[in-house]
Image 1 (spheres, rainbow, N blue to C red):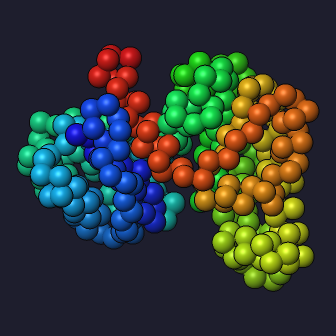
Image 2 (image 1 turned 180 degrees about the horizontal axis):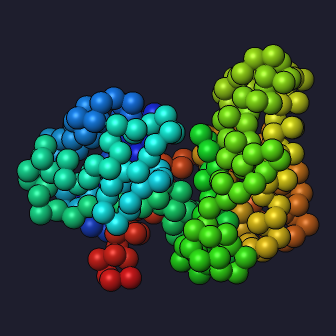
Length: 295
């Protein structure tokens, strides 16, 4: 049995999988407590692990965590600062802290992967994108997460028109960076200019569902930004498929028409995945499988 975690700022989504990668139950949701003091953050993670070991009656043979960056994925050390989450565990070893709390895990391996890369691997091998040669993945939430896959491998070295590390969030856009616009912050900025209030994605979605003109205008303007931000990478990478995930992508039907039109023009298929965590957990399993095979 392996325990796999999609670690977010608000929630930790976790699941146990068997040795063939099949879920042993469902993906469970836990409060992340990401702004707590250092010990409390790790106590919380250990509590999540115990909830599974107590129920299943066994300790995992391995643990995998999809973690937001910046993060030392090889050594399991968080380098997050200034992002409003996990600030108090900066520089601490996640495996070491968890093993202190659960000594049974001392000889069990930990594996870490960027959260969007986990989602991308899961979607590539489990979603409709399976078998597509080149796929571009975009997760829109607290920021702009991206990954680029060719023939099942995540591209990191500016290959075939993909950006360095597969990340676009820090690239210049308008008077700032892409991350400031294609994100919750970008939506809040637009909603304030249209309504005078900073609205959440859910609030805007509900307005659109009620056919509210201001809600529709917010997402129309957001869609223009999404198109302008992504078009250079769609043109340079020339993906066979463009896949959206993340909370805000659940509203793609209200902001994605311009992007879909561009993709149709370029011969690029589009896919929206609403259960990002399930795909991230599938991707983590694939990552562990490859690492244990020496790939």
